[in-house]
Length: 179
Image 1 (cartoon, rainbow, N blue to C red):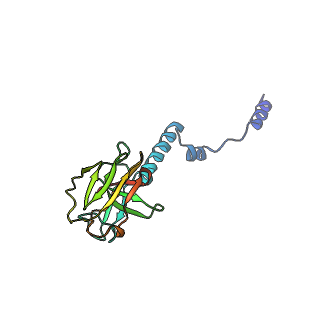
Image 2 (image 1 turned 60 degrees about the horizontal axis):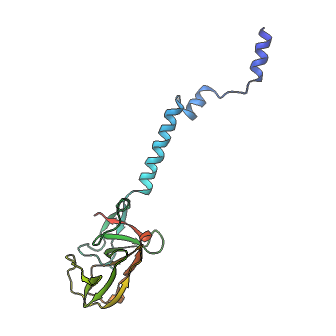
Image 3 (image 1 turned 60 degrees about the vertical axis):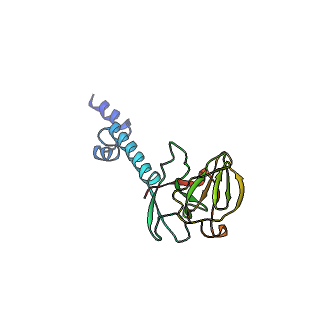
């Protein structure tokens, strides 16, 4: 009988030492799997949904924001609803590091025009209490597509040629300005 036991033990594959199994999988594999899941979700939140710091540069014209200040942009602000008229948003132009802060003044399906400095949305004057300086822009009407927003800076006292503004597709809008 003792000879048969020795043969049976030799046929079984070698097992990991107990300390190594505990180090790799833990004492309870279900708890280890739950910890891994929590770690993955936490990493996703930290690296994908975090607020993005956005430095303000001189050429970005949004009212009441001092030059050189850093603002936070919430990437989660538009998960449950779309941008609204008057929101200050961060827009990605070319790659993840070239962003502008602009104000949304036109929503999908609307027609936006500038007549003697006033913004017309579908022929109606847009109330802009945030606009501090007079504007004399005259731009022809632009019809926005189903996934397009019209964005422009607040400092419109300068000629329109000095500004970056116009249609922005929804996928270019990074998020809403928090601070």
